[in-house]
Image (cartoon, rainbow, N blue to C red; front, side, top):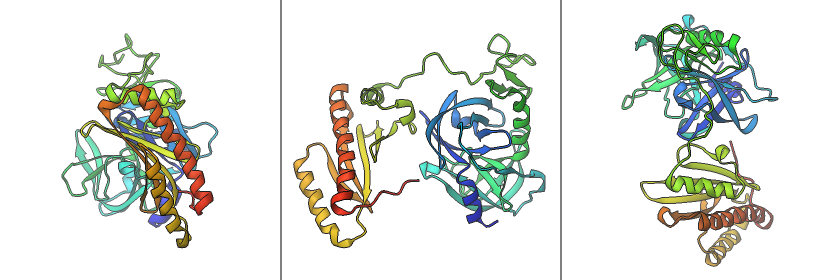
Length: 366
């Protein structure tokens, strides 16, 4: 298969995963009806948000974690038909084989990079890894490494920072072993012991803390009674979103980043503690296809900016964006609710009006 065929085959099976701490990649394995990713992607969360080509953002339960092999298995979305992808044979791989790494680096959805296997059995911390020169970056973690037959032969796991395309993937034989180990206990919160490799479940864990076989401390992916809350400006932002009827947990897209929809508009809120600013960017429609209508559109945007306070309409490449910026020291729940409500209302209004009045087109979304 050529890279384009591989990308087309995998796009619907590759999943984007988000927690309060960041984002990563996963992929659906139909044979076991589970989403596979890295343990460090889910971190210590027993529930994460997932999104894919075939479904909107939703919650997913983390059922299995494996610190030694950096693996985690997640609940697949219900009533969604996802494509079948095959697990390959690691033993058949050799140095120089072509591979494709698929993932969401830096939030750039469904990015695929092509390369070769630099060394098929690089040993690190007692495990074999596939060393590749295909570019992988933060956000690629947990994504599939695919051979030219369209089979998963590894899980993209880590890079060496400062190196020139030094990426490493956990071979598929470790993944298959872990899936088979967990399968009889599917639906139970489980963790693989770092010391003795045995599976520890809710039923077998000793004193709710230790591996029953070797006594090593083990942490199961259990949902806490109370979820930890953010602090400072991030907490105020989440309180504002709750007040406006948004699902805060589903809106999280990483640390200090939230994304919500209002009508047909998509609003992305980011907070940068280093610069002290909170930015609300509402992504509206695209410039009209008819260039004769652009002059009138620009005049309208300038007139609206003159009338509005605290909001600015701008163009970013082909996209029209409604922007709002606040200083974190000035933010309170009361003034934030008022500002965000106006941003959301205006975003939905302008998105519809610009399409009707100037022939603007729907924005492209992944």
